[in-house]
Length: 278
Figure (cartoon, rainbow, N blue to C red):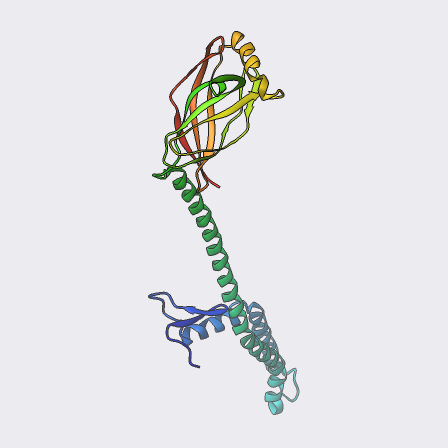
């Protein structure tokens, strides 16, 4: 099978050539091979210098008539000095020429992997940044149909018109979607922590009651514990309720609260924020 058009070798594998890129010509490749063969060939210079010194030494000896049979065998004398040097130089040059394409390939391979690793690192960083931006966009994007819970009041649970000793918050879901896993986040009054269990759901346009009690005590002790605290405390703080929709988008509604007297509180306006998705 022939090689497809616009496909070029880059290190290890064939890949489609980018627009505007010209493939390496034979002359360019040959130039890379020759440069790779002889650019670091420093000791060849020393070998050539040694050859010149040897020939000069023979010439001096011949000039001073130190070689008796020079006139008859001068060619053999010169060859005896030149051939060992030339032989080593030629053989090693051939070896370097044969080795050079492999060295060029290694260099291209290393550059290929370096570029690929840098691209992979940049891609990973871009993906992380993209995920972060997507999360921020998701957090700032409000579904049109979503639960909208507000705080109505704080008080005793009423069943059949009878007030129980269980305390908690009355909530209203003003949204067009059910609020699921509705829970009051822990808060402290006069150093005492109050907690709650999640209410499974408050349907759209419906009301609900979330039980709240002092940590370490029974929910049935909520009213007397609350009355005891409200006598001496005038704390101001923010209370939060957390919930989600059917698409696992989480929300939090907050409202300022101030204890104003014996068992009484003042609840401010509710505000909603989107927490993200799970």
